[in-house]
Amino acid sequence: MATEPKNRWKFVSIALLALLLIQLGAFSYIVLESQQTVAELQREQDSLLSAITSLQSQLNWLQGVPGQPPASLTPAQIYDSASGSVVLITAKWQTRTGLEPFASGSGFIYDQEGHIITNHHVVEDADALDVTFVDGTTVGAEVVGIDPYSDLAVIRVTGLTESLMPLTVGNSSVLRVGESVVAIGNPYGLSNSMSLGIVSQVDRDLDAPGNYKIIDVVQVDAAINPGNSGGPLMNMRGEVIGVNTAIIEGSVGVGFAIPADTVRREAPQLIQAGRYEHPWVGISSVDIDPTIVAEVGLNITKGTLVVNVVPGSPAEAAGIRAGTQGDVIIGVDDLAVRKLIDILVYIERTKRPGDTVTLTIIRDGAQMPIVLTLGVRPQ
Image 1: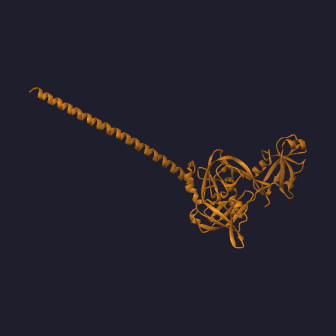
Image 2 (image 1 turned 60 degrees about the horizontal axis):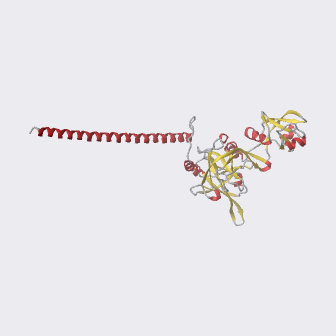
Image 3 (image 1 turned 180 degrees about the vertical axis):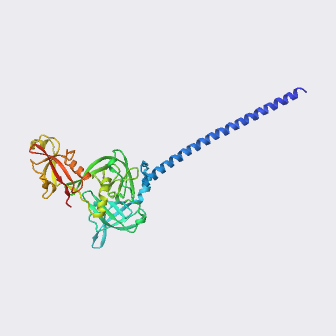
């Protein structure tokens, strides 16, 4: 009989130990689950904080809060925010049977007053223009201002001011080679298409009417095709940094855009006056190379030799000499001149008609300054 209580206590002890182990296991499980839950909640909190920070940055950018760095958007975000501001432009001419479309291109909303930026060559020779928005709405438009020298034009639609969403025109001078960009437009009439690429190079130049040059052109490898002309080239902050304008025929991935700085400089004057007045010198020249050095007998390797002075031009008024023994321009103000393009870029970026510049020239072997007052480039 003595062993029975002992066995009973032994059984009770084992039961209590088992119960304790079960409770300990349950407690450990609960603690582990709680830790995992806390970790998941922490991850969710971090993700939400990151999303809030990103949204705040984008809101700051949209509201223009000073001192706040703009957010980098995804291509999808850029398309979602910009597609409603990119339009299809259809150019029509008058025929015996009425107005008939003959060309199409792209454009983007510039302001709430209905002004749209596009290329000059998109609207050139048009008797009428139609503008089609992404929702299918089509309205007529009128040409407000043109500049064939920069291949830019401003057109205007009316009656839609409340629904217009202007795009922000950014600063193209800070673009870096390798920076990602997107092009939105209507290639071959395929409305609101987007292509993605990088800035291949900056400070290119393109030919313009009258043997002039379009300066500061942005080269990109984003797909640009007929119909993209006039559409926006955008950085990853959703700012317009160029107007898609041209490709090298037969090339793949060699496209060009008129820089946003040119748009910012010209658009207000195009809207107000219908044209942009480019500063003008009035010379033709050839850049110095070894052949010219040998033929003319110069002792310099940089500069541009004036071969023609336009009658009635600022250059003629300043007394610039032309010909095989003409003046060689080696400087403008404080800038050294290696080629004619250096002069064109300097005065386009920094000068206006009526401003004066000091040209440093070599005449008859001697260096001398010539003060010249810039005129207005003839239309």
